[in-house]
Image (cartoon, rainbow, N blue to C red):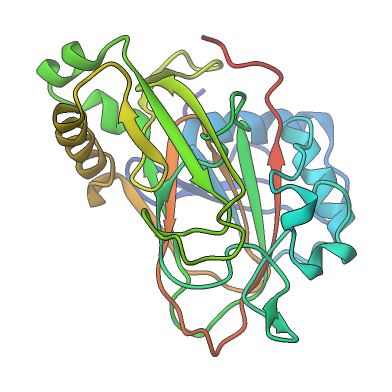
Length: 293
């Protein structure tokens, strides 16, 4: 089932495409209320069809957010080790991560507090990356702090046949230092905590069967088995192609927004914003039991 602009898929839900290639605004649903099985199935299909789903004007508690997450799959564990979690985590339920630049005693209460963040896939630096992420906005700055989402499947399908043939079957190594938002940034707290993993350059989605570019500017270090100069040149081409504005949706946050995105076939980035304005969001992830390759 593929849904087009403003299609009604039930007596409640409406769908409006946000970009020709990625994203749908879902209306007609209050996510603070229980979701019946038929609506849950429709939402799951919409997620696969559109890669990211946006819900506006929601009023969600942490418990609500966890319940909504479970509609799409098991709640993933918080990726950041306990010893590297900011102070705000003491008020979080299991599975809920705090993204915030708000400071107490000079220290951020949440993760990833400040500034522009390069395109990346959540948890690509782990052997079993999470399938999806949900982010719910509580407080947002007046300008900036927008999130950009790129469709990795469209990027793969529009890639040249030459690059597809050259990179098919190859793998890339991904490395991440907790708290960093730019490649090469070694001045953030907790940079000594890191993880890395190796995954295919082109990942096959385990539910749709479609391939997507699965490397990103922030975390991908090298294409395994290639000389550094060649690897760097190929990755630069892939990064630029994957971030083509034609298949990127930029979300300007409002309080009460909830966004769900698919980490298997999309990457995302964040624009800069004033450190003098508060930004507070709650994050959950959808667990993957196994990687299908």
